[in-house]
Image 1 (cartoon, rainbow, N blue to C red):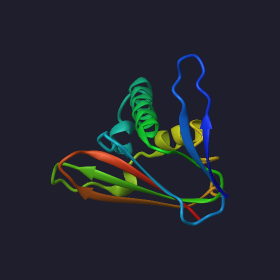
Image 2: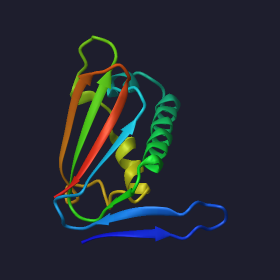
Image 3: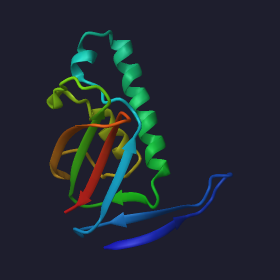
Length: 143
Protein backbone atom coordinates (compact mmCIF):
# COMPACT_ATOMS: atom_id res chain seq x y z
CA UNK A 1 0.00 0.00 0.00
CA UNK A 2 1.64 3.24 -1.13
CA UNK A 3 -0.32 6.42 -1.51
CA UNK A 4 0.34 10.13 -1.57
CA UNK A 5 -2.20 12.35 0.10
CA UNK A 6 -2.42 16.09 0.75
CA UNK A 7 -3.35 17.60 4.08
CA UNK A 8 -5.59 20.66 3.91
CA UNK A 9 -4.21 23.99 5.08
CA UNK A 10 -5.78 25.27 8.29
CA UNK A 11 -5.06 28.56 10.02
CA UNK A 12 -2.13 29.52 7.82
CA UNK A 13 -0.48 26.09 8.06
CA UNK A 14 0.96 25.16 4.67
CA UNK A 15 -0.43 22.24 2.71
CA UNK A 16 1.70 19.14 3.24
CA UNK A 17 2.21 16.14 1.01
CA UNK A 18 3.05 12.88 2.73
CA UNK A 19 3.59 9.27 1.82
CA UNK A 20 1.85 6.55 3.79
CA UNK A 21 3.59 3.22 3.54
CA UNK A 22 2.25 -0.21 4.34
CA UNK A 23 3.97 -3.52 3.69
CA UNK A 24 6.17 -2.68 0.73
CA UNK A 25 9.88 -3.19 0.91
CA UNK A 26 10.74 -0.39 -1.49
CA UNK A 27 10.01 2.63 0.73
CA UNK A 28 13.01 4.38 2.25
CA UNK A 29 13.33 7.71 4.02
CA UNK A 30 16.54 9.45 5.08
CA UNK A 31 16.43 12.19 7.73
CA UNK A 32 19.63 14.11 8.50
CA UNK A 33 19.63 15.80 11.92
CA UNK A 34 22.39 18.44 12.22
CA UNK A 35 23.39 17.72 15.83
CA UNK A 36 26.46 16.28 17.50
CA UNK A 37 25.63 12.67 18.46
CA UNK A 38 25.11 12.56 22.24
CA UNK A 39 26.60 9.83 24.42
CA UNK A 40 24.71 8.31 27.36
CA UNK A 41 27.99 8.55 29.32
CA UNK A 42 27.92 12.35 29.25
CA UNK A 43 24.28 12.37 30.33
CA UNK A 44 24.83 9.97 33.24
CA UNK A 45 27.03 12.45 35.10
CA UNK A 46 24.72 15.41 34.77
CA UNK A 47 21.70 16.49 36.73
CA UNK A 48 18.17 15.53 35.81
CA UNK A 49 17.47 19.03 34.45
CA UNK A 50 20.42 19.02 32.06
CA UNK A 51 19.34 15.57 30.93
CA UNK A 52 15.87 16.91 30.12
CA UNK A 53 17.26 19.97 28.30
CA UNK A 54 19.45 17.76 26.12
CA UNK A 55 16.50 15.51 25.24
CA UNK A 56 14.26 18.48 24.43
CA UNK A 57 16.94 20.01 22.18
CA UNK A 58 17.32 16.69 20.33
CA UNK A 59 13.54 16.44 19.86
CA UNK A 60 13.32 19.98 18.46
CA UNK A 61 16.16 19.31 16.00
CA UNK A 62 14.50 16.03 14.97
CA UNK A 63 11.16 17.77 14.39
CA UNK A 64 12.81 20.44 12.22
CA UNK A 65 14.65 17.81 10.16
CA UNK A 66 11.49 15.73 9.62
CA UNK A 67 9.49 18.81 8.56
CA UNK A 68 12.10 19.50 5.84
CA UNK A 69 11.76 15.96 4.46
CA UNK A 70 9.71 15.86 1.25
CA UNK A 71 7.49 13.94 0.93
CA UNK A 72 6.63 13.68 4.63
CA UNK A 73 7.20 10.01 5.54
CA UNK A 74 4.64 7.86 7.36
CA UNK A 75 5.45 4.19 7.89
CA UNK A 76 2.53 1.98 8.93
CA UNK A 77 4.17 -1.44 8.87
CA UNK A 78 7.35 -3.00 10.18
CA UNK A 79 10.55 -1.05 9.60
CA UNK A 80 14.30 -1.34 9.81
CA UNK A 81 15.96 1.75 11.34
CA UNK A 82 19.62 2.69 10.83
CA UNK A 83 21.42 5.52 12.61
CA UNK A 84 24.66 6.91 11.19
CA UNK A 85 26.52 9.08 13.69
CA UNK A 86 29.11 11.43 12.18
CA UNK A 87 31.81 13.21 14.19
CA UNK A 88 34.38 15.80 13.10
CA UNK A 89 37.09 14.83 15.57
CA UNK A 90 39.40 11.84 15.30
CA UNK A 91 38.74 10.45 18.77
CA UNK A 92 37.32 6.99 19.18
CA UNK A 93 33.61 6.99 19.92
CA UNK A 94 31.75 4.14 21.57
CA UNK A 95 28.75 3.41 19.33
CA UNK A 96 26.78 1.47 21.92
CA UNK A 97 26.47 4.69 23.96
CA UNK A 98 24.92 6.85 21.22
CA UNK A 99 21.64 8.23 22.58
CA UNK A 100 18.81 7.69 20.07
CA UNK A 101 15.81 7.45 22.42
CA UNK A 102 14.60 11.08 22.10
CA UNK A 103 14.86 10.84 18.32
CA UNK A 104 12.75 7.69 18.17
CA UNK A 105 10.23 9.18 20.62
CA UNK A 106 9.87 12.26 18.40
CA UNK A 107 9.45 10.14 15.25
CA UNK A 108 6.60 8.30 16.98
CA UNK A 109 4.97 11.51 18.25
CA UNK A 110 5.14 12.99 14.72
CA UNK A 111 3.49 9.80 13.39
CA UNK A 112 6.44 8.95 11.14
CA UNK A 113 6.52 5.56 12.91
CA UNK A 114 3.55 3.81 14.52
CA UNK A 115 5.63 2.76 17.53
CA UNK A 116 9.13 2.18 18.81
CA UNK A 117 8.66 -1.34 20.12
CA UNK A 118 10.10 -4.57 18.70
CA UNK A 119 6.90 -5.38 16.81
CA UNK A 120 7.31 -2.27 14.66
CA UNK A 121 11.09 -1.85 14.58
CA UNK A 122 12.43 -5.28 13.74
CA UNK A 123 16.03 -4.11 13.36
CA UNK A 124 17.97 -1.13 14.75
CA UNK A 125 21.55 -0.52 13.60
CA UNK A 126 23.94 2.19 14.79
CA UNK A 127 26.98 3.00 12.64
CA UNK A 128 29.61 5.69 12.93
CA UNK A 129 31.93 7.62 10.65
CA UNK A 130 33.96 10.79 10.39
CA UNK A 131 32.69 13.77 8.46
CA UNK A 132 33.25 17.49 7.96
CA UNK A 133 29.94 18.16 9.74
CA UNK A 134 28.64 16.49 12.86
CA UNK A 135 25.23 14.95 12.36
CA UNK A 136 23.00 12.01 13.11
CA UNK A 137 21.29 10.50 10.08
CA UNK A 138 18.23 8.28 10.48
CA UNK A 139 17.42 5.89 7.63
CA UNK A 140 14.05 4.16 7.83
CA UNK A 141 13.17 1.32 5.46
CA UNK A 142 9.90 -0.56 5.27
CA UNK A 143 10.11 -4.34 5.38
